[in-house]
Amino acid sequence: MTRNSTNDEPRTQVQSSSGQIMTAMPLGSLLIGVCGSSAAESTGELAEEALRYANDITVVATRTAAALFVSDLPVPLYTDADWIDKPLHVTLLQQADTLVIAPATATTLAKAAAGIADTLVTALICAHGPGVYFQPCMNARMWTSPAVRRAVDTLRGDGHHVLEPGPVASRASRTVGSGVGEIPGNVLATVAEHKRESGRN
Image (cartoon, rainbow, N blue to C red; front, side, top):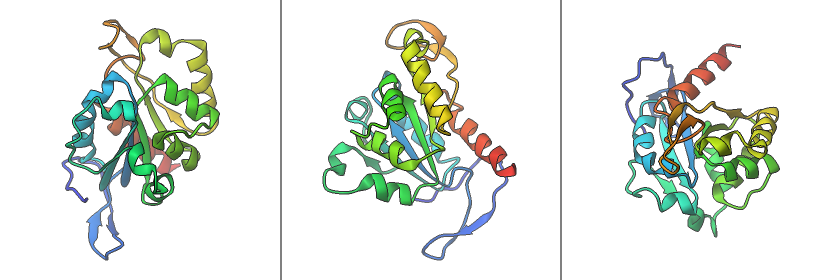
């Protein structure tokens, strides 16, 4: 689904597969992978924000994540149940320009670093290759644990982009610190800016 943007970043005109001329948005066709953090409750807000940066948005949620937010999103939603008889880890990527995992849990970071593809979200990461964007959301102790730091280092070494979480409050642990809490409101703006800068190099 194509949306108009209120964002002021420069754009070019592109032609869709149907021949329609549309404005090229910074993130193009965007896939958002949602994992089972309490921050998944803000998925609806993230999807609304994505309309400013992407021509098409699709949300893919783990089973735990899907139970945390209302499924009535303004964009298509897929879960593991849809993956049973369809190769969605292939077909969704064929249409996507950008894959953002937000929120990214410690479990998903570890699985992605190890190449484990036991959910639709982790299968998309594994099949994507370098260039996936991860927005970690977990409590501060988990974020600073050696196991999570190793996973982050591995993912970055493999060419992925693990964003730095901001100092916000954790819903689960009632604490404040880096790497915890809600999805930062500027995550998609950060990804768009990174892609724009990378395109200049």
